[in-house]
Each structure stands twice: as C-alpha cells, then as structure tokens.
Image 1 (tube, helix red, strand yellow):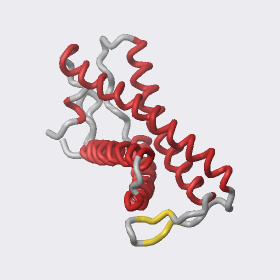
Image 2 (cartoon, rainbow, N blue to C red; image 1 turned 135 degrees about the horizontal axis):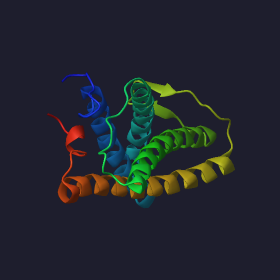
Image 3 (cartoon, rainbow, N blue to C red; image 1 turned 60 degrees about the vertical axis):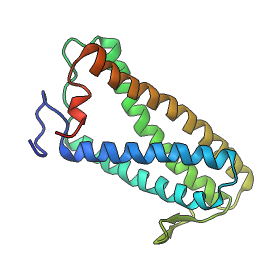
Image 4 (cartoon, rainbow, N blue to C red; image 1 turned 30 degrees about the vertical axis):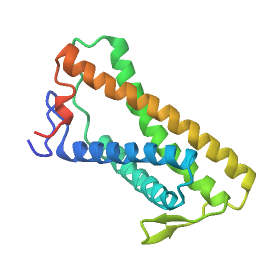
Length: 177
C-alpha cells in the first residue's frame, strides 16, 4: 500500500511514522516535565527544550501532511457523538502541541534562557526579558501539559476501546503492517 491512501484502509506510512514518533516524544516530554517540576533535574532541561522544538517541527510536518493526505473514513456505524469526540480530540491535540511548544519557547526566551536544539545550535530568543511573564507562561505550560496528558489517556483509551470492545479497524490502521 505504501503511501497510497485508500479511504477505507489505513493511514499512509508517512502518517504512521509521524504519529508514532510524535507519540514517543510526547510521552518522553510528559515524563521529563514531571521530573523537572518535582525534582532538581538540571541536565534534563536542555533535552526537554530540544525535544519540544523537535515536536513543534514534527507537528507542523504532520499538519501539512494531513492537509494534503485526507485521513481514512471512520466506521459508518460510529455514533455522531463519537465522531465529534474523535475529531475534536485530534484537533485539540494538534493545537495543544503547537501551543505548548510555543509557550515553552516564549517563556524560556522571556526568562531569558537558551533554547538548545540537541547541542547543534540555539533557537533564537523570540521574546524580550520579562521574568513575570516567563513565570506565568511556565505555569500555563505545566497546566497545558497536564490537560494534554488527560487528552492522551482519552485518545489511547478510545483506541483500545475500538480494538477490544468494538472490534473494528480503528487501531489497526495506525499500526505497522
């Protein structure tokens, strides 16, 4: 099937790779964020920032890919409320991933602190020094991360529900073939 999308089939190889890479990185970020928020984890900050930049790049690529490659249809017998929840959750996750990355970048710039990209270079400072703003943005960054984690639990739970309860193809179309 390669990258040819069939409306009744699964996602393209590119979509699946982008999905799973983003998923792994987001799970790492949630774990790293919790460690940073609760323990003195200085060396983890730079990696957390680098992965945040990478997620922003991947989400922009994912959105461009999705714009040019429609997603497979949902099952015809799926209730309207579940269709709405599926679409709403996906778009909320995209919006939160972009917002979370930008808030982290702006908040770090306002601190001011560097935003490294895996030791290769530093991202430009995109805000002037304003420690009060930085503190507020980092508090928002924490709460958005918590909300995103809750949405992810719902997203994963829905995929498992489709696989084990409804026994439809929803989960399988995102898995490797």
